[in-house]
Amino acid sequence: MGLRMIVHFTATNICFNPFNHFSFGFTCSNSNKLLLSKTPSCGIRLKSTPLSLYLSFMATNLHVSQSAPTHDFEATPSLQIGQYDLLIVGPGILGRLVAHTWRQEYPGCQVFGQTLTTDHHGELIEIGISPSLNWTGGKHKFPYVIFCAPPYQSSDYNGYIRLAALSWNGEGSFLFTSSSAPYDCNDNGSCDEDTPVVPIGRSRRTDVLLNAENIVLEFGGSVVRLSGLYISFVEFNLLGFRRSNLSMLLFKGIVECRPDHILNLIHYEDAASLSVAILKKKFGERIFLGCDNHPLSRQEIMDLVNQSGKLSKKFEKFIGTNDPLGKKLNNSRTRQEVGWEPKYSSFAHFLETL
Ligand SMILES: NC(=O)c1ccc[n+]([C@@H]2O[C@H](COP(=O)([O-])OP(=O)(O)OC[C@H]3O[C@@H](n4cnc5c(N)ncnc54)[C@H](OP(=O)(O)O)[C@@H]3O)[C@@H](O)[C@H]2O)c1
Image 1 (cartoon, helix red, strand yellow):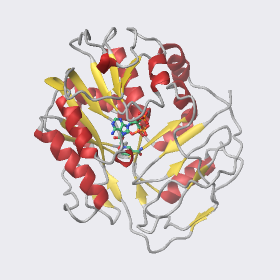
Image 2 (tube, helix red, strand yellow):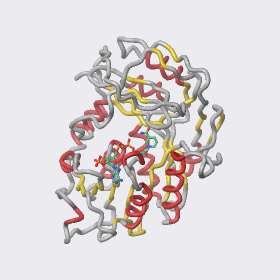
Image 3 (cartoon, helix red, strand yellow):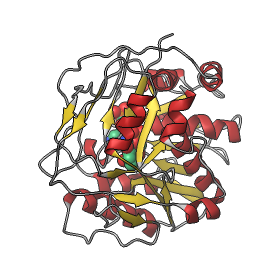
């Protein structure tokens, strides 16, 4: 099996998105953020083909359904909700990994998935998640609810957050997966859980996230602010995706962004394990931070990728000079309070495992 890798850093960070061929892209928008490029990809072949034991484990375990998933759980009047059953709003990449980790913690529990479309319901049923499209205003309530849907697909993001809150019965935990974008730091400076956030009104993007966070906290839920997420494409396939829901990216050897902008990363699997650890501890009304504590500049990331020897084509250079800088995230307090450490201690560590 060929080695394929997706590194999917949306919104705040970078995106590179390797498939059969390893491809990735950096583009800078006018707002000087790095965004997905929708331009067709030019492929780069990978050299090596290792597959980790973890992936074998995922292959044999992820598709095991503990209970028979239904086609629309909201339409099931006799639905019995158990003590450890979990509703995932937005069962995409992170949500499916949360489902997998949750089932390891609570074998036999039911996992439900609230989606925006029916596009992935077949995939969800195959991996044991009962999907639904139709909110019923809390007809069914769940002890554990996690909101993993990104804002960009929703016209009324806060409305969906409220519907998720109304689906929580208040007994276990309600967790919202936010982003580290609201921390008000753009000079490559240090940033942790106590760093002030961007004031409401300065940026539409951070306004959406901060308003959503406030609703969750008002309902007694918790928030985890995640840094840039990445995953290998093999894992992505094992999560049951039949086709990519990610844009193919243009490989650009030269990118018009400054090379010294600091980015912060966390592997999707670690974001899932952190989310599950927070859910299990039933904190309530708390904000945590998810990152690997190994911030890297754009240049350092691309040097690591080039040096990894996984690519047959080299990234050339960044040529930007005026775009803003980033931040250096540290989540030592979250680690200590949640009792959590990442499996992938850094992006360099992740590359070594490929
Ligand atoms: N990617 C990053 O670098 C990054 C960084 C920081 C934080 N985050 C946060 O991490 C979380 C997980 O991201 P991800 O990459 O796993 O997402 P993803 O793979 O793109 O998953 C999207 C899922 O959310 C569903 N969805 C979208 N809007 C919805 C809505 N209003 N109601 C219900 N379901 C909805 C989609 O349903 P369909 O199946 O119908 O399409 C899909 O199942 C998100 O909260 C995101 O904001 C991501």
